[in-house]
Length: 326
Length: 286
Image 1 (cartoon, rainbow over the protein chains, first blue to last red):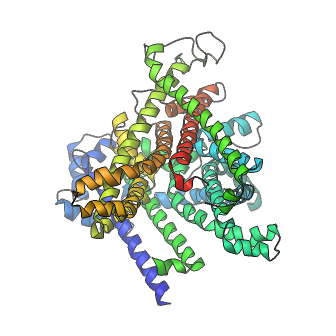
Image 2 (image 1 turned 30 degrees about the horizontal axis):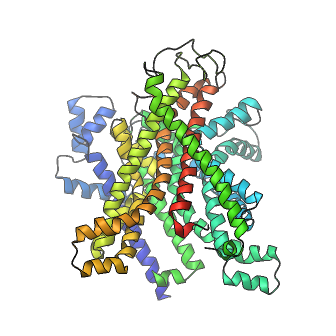
Image 3 (image 1 turned 60 degrees about the horizontal axis):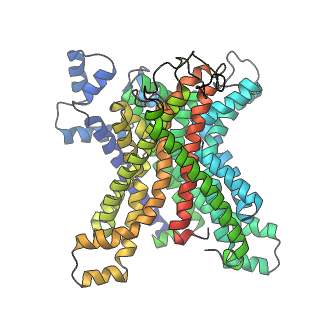
């Protein structure tokens, strides 16, 4: 297994390099504006007190040369010391970890929904190229691709909460809810439907389009023709030979889109008052809590790097040719 | 690309004609929105902020106010037209800026190759990894949001795909015979780049750019929805945000501007796809 091991080590080193690069970018953002980080933060805390600014400057070691500051900053972030959130009165890492489960639940449901439906609709469209079903699915994808998430969220609230009264418009649980564990989970599930669907639509559109073209390409391969030639039913050809292979590009896209989905969750969680990272980001915008914002940005970047790494490894596992080629 | 497409010409033809109809609709929509943006100053010379009628006038009830008024009695139609300007200006200029950054980075990497290529591609990867919408949010919190800074921030997050594309084109074009013969006759590298390689990249850059304009419009709308837009101009995302608290009593205030964003993005995507079919012969049969 030396080949796969070398591949693994190289990819991990690359990922580490990217993470350090991201830290440098974060550092530069903080040091780019006129004045320094202490001025920015003091300004955002609403105080022009010179003593406070001095204290911040000492606290962050801003009296030292820039490269030394950068080295400390990299060290801090690599040990996951993301600083202190002044608006929440707790370390940034704690604030993020407290909100993470809700966001993971929302994003996880949205990903599963978008992925499963995307594969299904993409395969149907790719199997019926040029027929009305393909046209209908393509139009749906086109619409999903162009719909702003916040607008879609509001439309869903208008229809399902205000109009029909079927689903709650916000929050994660009914306030004051008492009952068995199952009842509570069902309650969360009911609150989850609208935000998860909203978040899923855009990615569903991406996956459908990608899956469709991927299915068309795979269906033209020789081994598919062979499968047909030996008398395999069309159903089995698609189930066994086409869908699985056509799914690979969608898997890569899924890894690439995690970052976008984190961004989308800011808007969706804001609309549905979902108590996750996105909602916290929205609050941090208004309290100008730059430490918290940079912490969220850094951790979500790391999240993207890790997801891409996992997807690459999965890919390598599914298709060993990749490591040898690269 | 697929053999089915070659073997079955009528199906391809049918597909082509459907796209043409859609393409026309997209063009028409885009022209309409552009016209609204351009003529906003002529139709409503007083600007979008003046009181035009009673607050919360519903659409289609008072003549002269086809889309009604908002909570301050401002004309929703006027605000939409002025908002179209902002969306389009930011969408187009940020895409041009991103394309320029991408062409410079990708072109340099693809032409010089070796360690410069490696370094620049790692640099590109960093920007491609950072979640773009989060990144723009942080940039806008640190720098004051104005049309200029918003444009710049969107450009900063959207250039990587262009850089990768241009690099790939430079790599493949650089080893083609016509470029090699240029080198052979002693043509200056600057001339080879600008007169020979770059013009051949343009069609693919334009195809990617059309999608980028749509994404930029969506990012701008999202920013202004979160309250990070330029406070001095009317913008669609901001209008949706302002309409949100009164969604039960005056739903049109958030539905109409959101629909405008949807139509603009949809028409850009359709036109972009049409361009893709026409400009990108390699994808013609997809």
